[in-house]
Length: 465
Image (cartoon, helix red, strand yellow):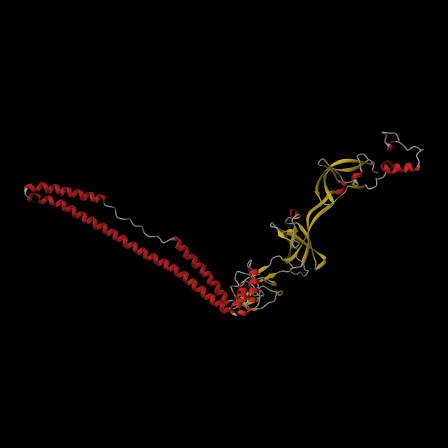
């Protein structure tokens, strides 16, 4: 071969040996035609692509209905077992009626006390009104008396000059001067005298009226509720479904305290009442006395005793890794697989995406995601292990290529398009990506042929077929 000349541009000389020809074929496969070894060319086609996020979780009731007792009290009888199916209105438990009657009597006393308080306030207001009226009358009488006294005094000053002529001449002038001086001083005293106080009628305080009305209303409500409970000492099912015993409320920190007290009590078992107090009563107060719902259990009107669940309306509380949670959104379609039914796939939808991280079962950071299953006739149970595949991306009829077809230079993306049997570099615009494929938004048309494997073995203009 001549230096600087392309071997592909000239025919091989007959003098070449067979081994030399084979060497040329190995070094320059493009010269002999066909696709170089390790290079694959594929036709561009449109298709559907998707991406899923996989997570695990537990099956739970979608819309459990809490059942509260009509009042706080003691269970005397349970009429259902956990897992029983009940209809709306069925009896679930009975409460101690005598205890509820005592509560109703106490509530009635509270109502009467509230009404009495309002009556007391009204009586106090009536007394204040009477005091006001008496004070107002006293002020009026005092003013009238003072006016009359002033008139009498002034009249006396006016009568004195009538007797002056009867006095000796040397005393008349003195008396006239003295009377004039005294009259002037009295008038001055009248002018500087403070005005009588002005009284305003008392108003019944609006706050007291509102407080009395609110107290009466609240105590009336409590009494009516307690009276109803005393006459209906039952817990009934508000809807149809399966019965679940609700877990008793727990107070943070008391579990540890209960264990500590229980152990301490056992150490003091020989101290009689003291051991009973520390290990028994206090443990019960902290929730250590047992949590099983049974006859004799105390229930609170503020805490549910049962839940009614529909086992055909279920959801999965899944744990999604923090690296995947940005891709998950409400409304995305989900396929749910249960360990109990490995051959079935249940359809679902994301209905809630958590915003607060939790610690996953493996110690990783996860976020809770609620997936609601479509209603099914398959018998389901609470707590089934579930695996969910959340479809976080779905594209229909797009052009996509294996990621191995793409290469980048200076921040731009390229592929090799095969035109006229040679590789031509072409810039493309990409969209969604996954570990296996990349979406091509522009730069390629359906039916074109591109290098999808062995891109690093291809050069611009190289013959590949």
